[in-house]
Image (cartoon, rainbow, N blue to C red; front, side, top):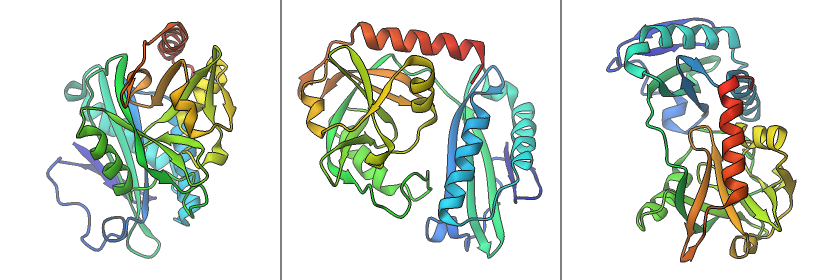
Length: 269
């Protein structure tokens, strides 16, 4: 099932329903925003944090303010209707676009089963950069092809992520994740001034785990003792390899992941 509507109302529809206009500006020009979060045992994790970021992203694009109670109602209806198919772990996506006509945005909510990701993975350093002065910096937009091109480059060599710097040569983020580097035993993550997305898992790592924001050169990837990726679906995931450099997932990353999973189990995000 999926849930489709506007900022004011909506309802459930079959997965194969033709529900979005070909003139929707989310489709034609990428004028839209989205959130992805996990559903654990039927409960969306850190939902309110994701909804607040949805509001911020919509504001950056100048979209009408979404009615969050409508979004919450849609999520509840979808998860109740699809509970058996989603199972213990799911990936929920909220997509909010400008719609086909001014002032008539489209709200689409979907959820699919999600397989747990391994604790470690591999990545590359991308040849592409983030523009920290972009008009949409800080917004999670549906105009995602730049991320996909970078990720395709990583996939071609068997990696699952591409880490990018910005136009000033500072460490920024992955194509679909935030980054933590461990320097002299301290976990650090690029500040928002780098142009990185204000990731929800990133913010939880700062609040819960004591990860500190810092202005970091891209070259820190060559010397960091440990490198970790964070996102809603990855949680906290250590790198075993970056480009040709082998990394031994070690104590700090394992400790951060363990503490993060323990907090998730409490459901107090």
